[in-house]
Length: 165
Image 1 (cartoon, rainbow, N blue to C red):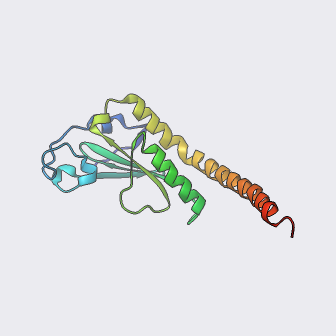
Image 2 (cartoon, rainbow, N blue to C red):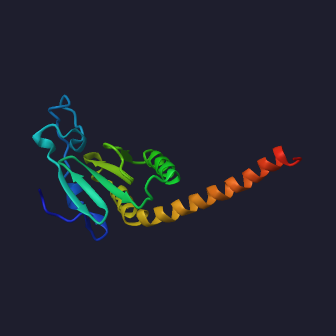
């Protein structure tokens, strides 16, 4: 396993991404398939580094960045909010689900086709650095808003149907 730091000056090590190269996957008919997903041959050897709630699986042409989010166990509101977040993020990034989700995690895949996109790299780094803290605040806000909404509408329903009792 290689020894390197995940984050250098608040940026995912440019060295990791800049070394990505397109390959012809022998297991996928010679197409450039992300090794971090396939992992069926020696080309797709995965280096794993874990640091401060972030895990990176790195290969020759791709990486998955797993970002752990602080969540309360089995909280249905947080789980629903996280599912919606994953859905919306997947419209902008390769947000993937690899295996079973345990708690709160978002996994983002970067490939060799993205290695020259400095704006994407900066945005991913900012997301990794800032979002776990932001997530806690947003989850609390969502619960507060849901509670306010349910109290308001429960009173309206009770009045509309049972006011004359």
